Amino acid sequence: SLFGGYYDSSIKQSNDENYNSYGVTISMPLFDVNRGRTIELRQLEYLQSKLQVADTKVEETNAYQDSLKKIEFLKKKIEIAIDDEKLYDSLVTSTKNLYEAGEKTIYDIDTLKNSKQTMIFDKKIYEIDAQQVLLNLYAKMYGEI
Image (cartoon, rainbow, N blue to C red):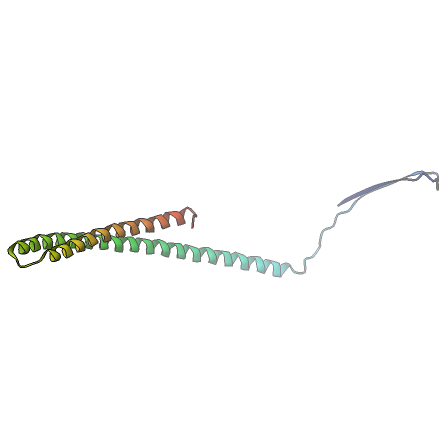
């Protein structure tokens, strides 16, 4: 630290009417009583941060793997919905033939057409769900979530 001062008196008390004071002070602790504890605390903080980074890495890896599994599961559901749609196509065709033969009613055909349409909508829903999983993964990667 530095300090300085200047004093000028209008009343003459001595031969010197101006009083100047200048100085420099340096202080440095010679011994830190808590030095060992401070070092231990810093080491503990460092180890805690390393552990936190490792935990975060494991969590993010698990979240990524979970997202991949969800997408694979939805792809399988899409394949099943496509297969079901094809089955309903063949059922509608055979039911139309049976309707023409007089063994089935028009309501049976309508029910099968509605079930086929349900499979088409299910497939679209699964595709949207897969896109949503990808979007969440993308947003998490860029810090939006």
